[in-house]
Image: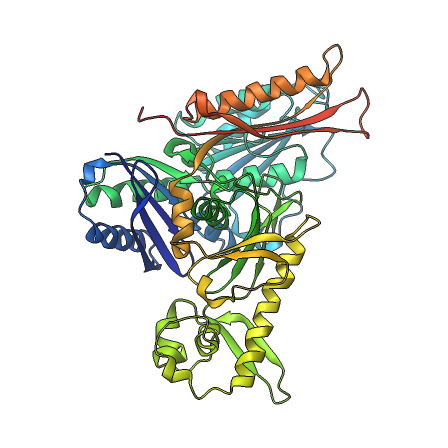
Length: 520
């Protein structure tokens, strides 16, 4: 029997599930996240294996969703020195690289920036030829001073040849194992945001190698030698080598995993999902079983990027959120939270802090801790606070619902029991079995994907033939990522006429997903 291990590391808890070959949960656990992420993962795996007797050799695949890379950007820690090459002179000299990054981030990011001749027009015509001699000179100048290279050329998603040539020169001069991040492989159309994402990706390569090596070693100590995958922010998986190359794609994988797990556990492909954690509540939308993607540029730690991100609304409401009432009776819920100290500080556990968990227990919605410890709370006050925080969730649901009618709402997360089963704007409210470990379930059942985002000039070709070509490229990318060819399906196919460009230019995006092939 082949088993799959799914682990999701959150700010408060590290969750783990073990699935059988039919993707049924046979064991699950929730452990506190530790300052050392790997220690928390080790505790979760140990606790999981203590729950059920299995042949550890039967655990063939292990999937991890983690906030590790997000934290590195937000905290400005662990970012390695980068040499960044923008290919766009003279067209882009007016706006230097990283101009729109926060000043404190630029100060903490060890980056050497170069703007050299190169780049393309939207139709693939060259703006200026690549100056290989200048590239070689700059690479020699930074040899021994940087750990990674990033490259961003104007309209490189249309033609990536110049970026690829710089990558070849970087590996020739700096060493074959030097991580090189190309913007044509990371972001979509749009120079500055794509450039930011590429530089961040290069700066995270050291964090990614530490994370992937640590994950492999942690499992090996428990006798698990498995094929490793990492959750990415579109709700699909990427293999170990891809996670080392594109660590930035793991950002926001936590909420995404919860949405995928909610779809699996409830058997509802189209719904709104409310994921209640210890500190925050994330609300997202499922479309065909996958998270709806955001149309807005994504900001990570104040850095504006343009790679794909799930459309998630977050509010400062969780099981550990602190509840306060001022002298006038005004209610305040969050964003302050006791977080992982909930078992020590909440009233129902004998603590001295009034939290959302205490209110839910007093209201009769949750059976957590000792209810007698909140029996003294004024019933009218409890009702007012409960209505207040429920209204926070309902307001968020109304914002995320883009349909003309009410939608099903799925409650997941460790704090799912803190909400009422009646919510305004919900056609029905569902709290599925194993709702508390939906995130780990989501990463364990995830598929693999391939995508294309490009600008085409139809010319003699019809739009239909351009779309078919994009579909084919997305399918091939999914298969290359490890998907079974017969399971690959297109889940996104968009065409957008670019009226501000001549020659009937059209932007085409395609995304395909498929089931992981048997062990390769």
